[in-house]
Image (cartoon, rainbow, N blue to C red; front, top):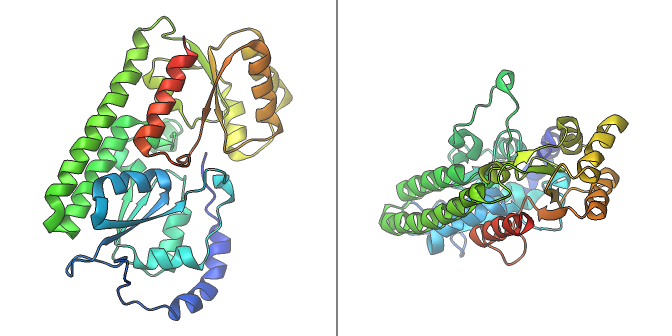
Length: 311
């Protein structure tokens, strides 16, 4: 699912935000959320979601302060609206970690409005190396479910932190190594599912959020593309498309349904009910971290849930 840019609303609100920011001190605060590159203060990091925010925190540790723009697991990411506090955080950021790929275009808009031209912006989709040319197929922007991409982003975060704070470079590198090793375990556990009896099984989705993980497990998406596109874009599903989607469950064409808990509605609820009625396993997925979870514990839960569903 792509988060809305809200560009028009944001641009019209910049004048008001600027007045708010004008009254805020630009001097270093006591929590160290400043540019921290020469005076020992902490690196100020802003991430579009708590997924990338947590990964940055795993690497930066006590040497950084992280602010994630979307962190409430109960929030529909489609409903994100910026306020003066968000703008202020971006105006002071040394590093900005965004997803890219059209998922969180609002970050670039807000950053321009904050007049912050010095922050290092790390775009996960750009770092992934995935083809973003529309002519060659539509990009799945949910790259935090792709473990190789997560390791690439972690490496770029480490390089950036090390440049801003050379004194802590060894710590950043060690943290990245430990994080990467844990991600490798997740990738190996996911790949191991390809050798199980359910290898090559069909799956259904409400949105393409977890497709990188499902594909890495050797599973095949059987959902009509028109269905998942309509749900992702917030448009109505054609009756014939809905019929084909529901038939996946009644005909037992799929082994599991991956259901995005954060974006639901009457059409996704019909699909959920059909899966339950047919006895098809359901794996709930989200786009942001659940309360009390780190990226690693969250993804461990996701991999385990898929493995359990395929038994």
